[in-house]
Image (cartoon, rainbow, N blue to C red):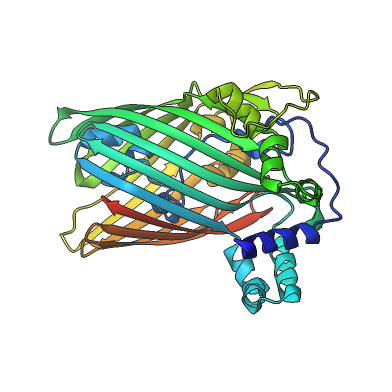
Amino acid sequence: MKNIKFVFILFTLVLLVAAPLVAVDYSPESAMYKQTGESFMGTSTRVLSMGGAGLGVTGYYDSFLMNPANLGKGGVKISIPSVTVTAYNPKAILESGMIDDFEEGTDEAMLSGAQKFLNTIKKDYGDVLTTDTSVVLTLGSFGFALEAQERLMSYKTSSDMTSTNLIAQITTAATAGLGFRLDLFPDFLTVDLGVSGKAIYKAYFSAQSASSITDLISEEDADPADKFLNEVPLIAGYSFPVNAGVNLNFPLGITVSAVARNFNGAYYMTSYESLNSWSEEVLGEGIDDSFTPSGTFTSESYEFDAGWNLNAGFTWAPKVGSLLKPIIAVDVLDVMAMSGLEGEALNRAFFEQTRLGASLRVLSFLDLRYGLNKGYQSFGVGVDLLIFHLDAAYYQLEYGQDIGDKPIDALSVRFSLLSR
């Protein structure tokens, strides 16, 4: 614990000359908090390693979270629990020499390691670390999932590491889904229909810069944890989005899918003076009995909606035997955004919104995966050992306005029990 605190203080010292945080608008409409307005989707190593494609891929614990119509096939899946950890900029971190500095352990080396780590965080938006946990159960046509995600985001106003701001966000979600199959023409066409609803609660702290962190730890005879509980603003609220999907299943393992996502997806958020204030107002009991409101904080309410979108997918899962099970998936996201486009603009939009993925299951215990997302390659592997399942994915995501502006690589590792 002392080592963690020491590293934390070193990071603060490296950023000591950073300008203080002046933003008072905590809503996603402000540049600082734009990423907090993104629709929630739990991290799926399987989907990410396939370039983000997989609307029509069935047989996995999280298939119905991608498309509720996948429940139409029925079956039983139990994943208790699933834990996924995602680290961003792993290539830059390994090449920076930061790990060697931390292993050396001297004060000078630790400070050098902190500087090298901060230099891996790029200008504008990004992510630092994400941790997902989930419990999923599907029984026949019914699916239920509980998810929790911790996400540490970054925002830099310049390339200088002293402009780094970190935003910690926690999201919880409960999802219930229902699907069924229609055997319209049993030898030619079956139709899967499904719908799911989520209850989401999201909370994020105000962005922390070096100066704000310094303020928390600099006062003598003051506990930084107590100051954090009582002085760092928290923004929290809820949403109840609805997703609906359909699969058209043809012979030879061909499936055509459509998913309408994020109906009724508006978030209703409220700012609180601190975590302790939130606990008193929402839970009816404060965390710290000695907390006294400052009297200078004005609570505000925010409403934002990313809007609904329509996604389409094509999946081919031919039956070639018991030893090899290949899958090819092509998804086009937000197809409505391409309406009215022509020529070069249409071609560009189609390229940016198309996801390509392939998976090969070998001997019923090994999955090899590959994908393309906006031209960025992704790779993944899944290993099943009895009730233990391990998945890993290495991929790149684009955080800039255009392709090539700001790609960030990421490594996700997932561990789960029971169903894959």
